[in-house]
Length: 249
Image 1 (cartoon, helix red, strand yellow):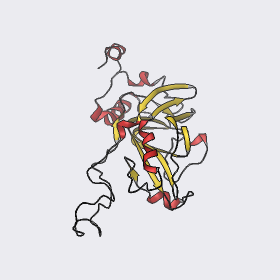
Image 2 (tube, rainbow, N blue to C red):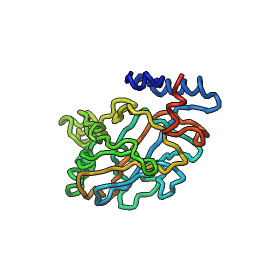
Image 3 (tube, helix red, strand yellow):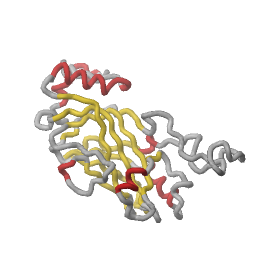
Image 4 (cartoon, rainbow, N blue to C red):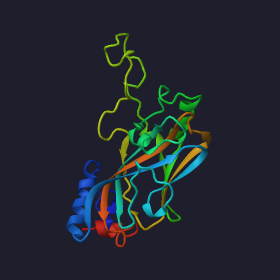
């Protein structure tokens, strides 16, 4: 435990049990606040740009994809796991809701999937980018490197496994990328922050330079998934500045 946190009486659960420990802490000290396991999913349409901003709250408006889950105005979310993914949706630059619903999440730009000219190469810029958490005009987290979420497994869609067609596909190639477990492509969030549904909250994706990541005969997206603790109807009580109070014994 950080000595500063120890002096303040603040308890930070171990990474492997943070979600359960946070739920228990609120159940024990704040019985009027219902704490449950939850997740959020935010997406942005990639274009030719060097920076992007993702709205995290429903109340902020803007286009919300059918696959997104944003924070309700009445709730607070405490992320304990975060993952960054890319996806290719549809067979045109205007994918439908059905296209979004079946698009698979990817942990690296597989050139067998992102087949446009320089498409896979350009998407490498995502993994040289950083994420910022911004609440109103305050930067809560200045930079999380996206590279930590990159995963390239041994099984890669479209890559030939053997000459024997019966091995996996009609041409002996893998049909899907490797996906090892339920937290594949995710990492623990070591900093405890509270995302309040009443605030103006954004995730900023900042690339080293403007790059065309839009795709050609489809549309490419950057996807962030957060898992953690959802505090129902707590936005009027809990925010990032008051969180320490609730975590004390």
